[in-house]
Length: 278
Image (cartoon, rainbow, N blue to C red):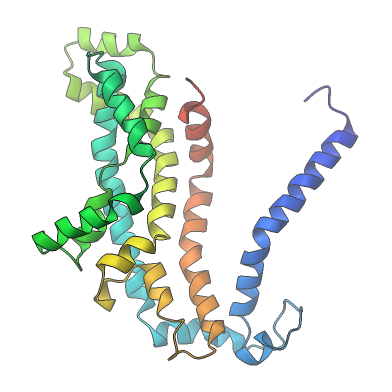
């Protein structure tokens, strides 16, 4: 950084600014359309600002047309439950692979890496058939259980745990702590950056997931935010794209707020444990 010229820094910031603008442009137009009535959306004008206040009614009508609050609550319940079980299962598994030094550890870690290569679409049909036989379709169970164990969470926690000195674990054992106590009372508080980084990945992934809810959910009351948003785009809704965009903004805001709140911990978790140490 000290040897870089001001011209280089200016060019670097300019390139990053252009890339950032490209990523943010769709969100900018989403917000713009959410504030316009349909008569302005389809005029072909590139004016991003609404000419009146009628477009603000899109945010009122979006709650009147569909139970958007229920969709948001379903998304929060599903994401929170999935994250809870993922951390509950992944942290001890990563601790065992990294710190207990048993013979099958490398094999188990290899299976974890292999599981990272398998997309949910490959296992969707067997999981659907299993849930159907158990009578668990169209329920919170069907939305939560298939994702309650995450190979990516095990990998991320394992990478972060490798940065924790073994001497700390040995000292705790000499003090008479059990492995369970070491895991939850000593190691787990230290993995907060990794847990926060994974929480961002997990919540964003499952909050935005449409594929799985579209398969297992039939009752509108169980719809997650993306599935509920899909109900705005129908022959019934006609050309109510202002309400569709308003719903998109409302559904996106919790993710933006969560990321901004966890931004520092997220960056620390990725830089310290996200695969940067081999």
